Image (cartoon, rainbow, N blue to C red; front, side, top):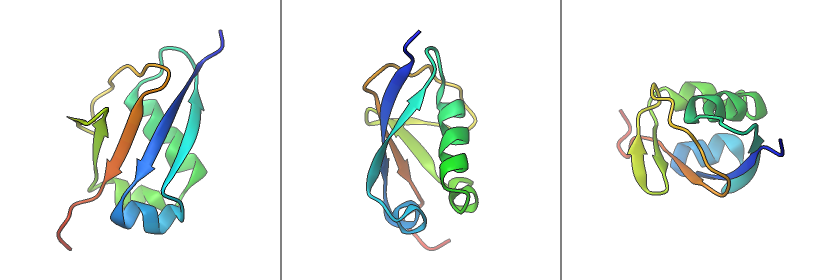
Amino acid sequence: TMGLEVTVLYFAKSREVTGIPQECVKLHDGATTKELVAAVTQLHPAIESVLRSCVLALNQEYVNLSDAVKLKDGDEIAVIPPLSGG
């Protein structure tokens, strides 16, 4: 199978640690948001501590980091840290 490609958007602190506003991440068919988080952590080890307090937005719908939501090719996932400092 060809797998799928999703766009990950980084905001605020997650953009600081990755150094980029967005990137395309390739995953296998049937991959979930949980696997995407693992892939992003491999690409950017420094993001791990930031991710603990982040929320994900899949096509502008909030998703818990603990959830495993199936991804489709072309999905857009935003990594949104808490807006306040704490």
